[in-house]
Image (cartoon, rainbow over the protein chains, first blue to last red):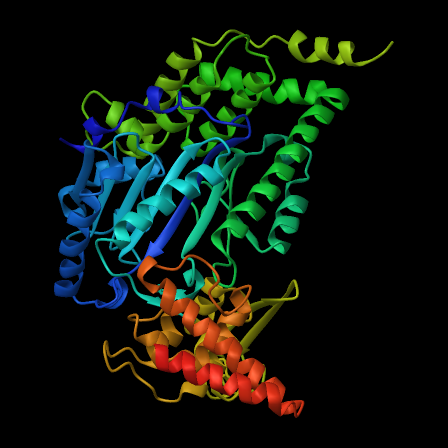
Length: 371
Length: 164
């Protein structure tokens, strides 16, 4: 079975919901682990990487925690398009997509535990949850890690904890992160302040696809940087606390924009709707920035009963690999053809969304004022 | 462009540094660059990019501290470490540990692991901690010339080591 057949369709994937998912798109916890006796993947010879691969793939595949139905494959067996789809679903890193023989992926049926074998470390095990569910994700991946430790011996030192290829991951090997949709803070021009404050707390803020990527569509990723000298629980709780504060700030920013500048807000949302419903060629960058405002409109009730899963689906299906997959010929589209096809898909899907209703914003405003 | 230091030769090394929110540009000839330590801008940038500003300098010091060490298990050298900011294998952490601590201090909360411990290691781990704290108490007792406690701690340490 190919990974494309294994994955649920984009429309279904976007139905997953969780706490605070108006603002927190998803939560993730990943652990970095290495075998004690084999050099780290970045410094090992092909034979050593294969040895690690052959030790780890069966160990991960046999975990009863992952259930009966899993997808496990060597990276050289995956076509480039399939790998890119996995990146767009945030299941593997862009770095891992570039790997071939000697690297692998194991994914469970629920698509909420994904293991990368021989990425920068021998193992990157990650748990994903919709909405704000960092604790749940940590507990899930902690259990997977404990079960794995019964099968293989990890590199561990009393002093430094779990040993990793890069010293930035040393100790717990944990990276706790959440993907946030923050159009309110961007519109209120408070986002830079928030990013600086979050940075001061030792957390990193990045774009859509992690390290070194742009914050397209007002989507930001917040994650811990320090992994050594603190228990996992403390790290999870600290980020959770910070995220709850960011959520509050985003909610306040939305409310104050609604009260003070409803026309500006409606202008952004209405124009986004207009362009998405009527364009004949659109780049992924423009599409994502507009879909962000569409999503904000859905959150604020401007589009009646339109579910936010629809806007999330548009977001996912606007990505290059997902577009290609949906194309009848499944051929490699040039970027011009892709922009045409993207616009077509967006026009068709946006036709399901009713015209924006300004009363949803203006009405609410009158309700709120005592006069 | 002329070298900004000697103002004679053509500048061939161009470095842009951002420190304290100020952009500092350096254009130097090869000789002056070497003298002013701008000779390896690539390694500089990668380390800073990966490990945060300031880490590169710490790593420079770290690699000086470890000298020309290389890992006897995977062959990783200090130059490799400096260049990539990564280590080669688990054993490298023993080999390069002397210089590593100052690097770790710049990027982590502490340089001691306080998180999860593998099930099989738990007793060893607790044992090592116990021994460490007994030793610490012993030193403190000696410093305070509390020889009664020191003798008791010495016996405890002896018994603990024998039990292991």
